[in-house]
Amino acid sequence: MTRNGRLPRTRRQLRFAVSAEGRRALLYSASDIEVLDAEADRTHPFLSRLGPDILSQSPSASELSARLGEARFRGRQLGALLLDQRFVAGLGNYLRAEILFEAGIHPRRRAADCRDEELERLADRIIALTRRTYRTRGITLAPSRVARLKAAGAKRSEYRFWVYGRDDAACRVCEGQLGVQPVGGRKCYWCPSCQPLPEGGDQGSGHL
Ligand SMILES: [Zn+2]
Image (cartoon, rainbow, N blue to C red; front, side, top):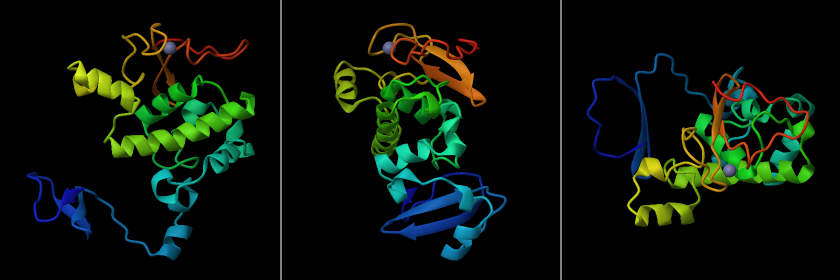
């Protein structure tokens, strides 16, 4: 995304540009581009299976928590489900870790094993953190903590995340050691104390 009138310096080939309201989106180096009308968008084999986009479609927390309880989603590990674009479109690896931390839910738990209030909290955090990260350009830590750390001279990398990429650091809430393990094929960061796994749950490998 850039302001109109100036192109970034790059050797990559500009393949597609959309301009609106003084800004434009530029797509470089894409090998396969399709422009679809609304009907084709609804019937496209991949796009028609995408879950709701939090920013453009604004699903409510109760709609999302009901979606978590659907038969096709409720048996999946939440850490993997949040990366699945059929559940919700657009969540990446850092957002899923940050969302699960704020919800206090271990990434290997399943919606089927969570209480209703936990699912409601998770749905609420999916929406809130997606919007926050859009506003802050990628900072998921609570704004009051960001302000405090900035005032103390911290760098962006030091006030950006709750848990993501911080497995060698202490939890910002309980001060315990954070952990990392593969969930859904990618590294997932979490706090073993703030996001406990209930008795009898799969503990996973605990480390990579
Ligand atoms: Zn903690």
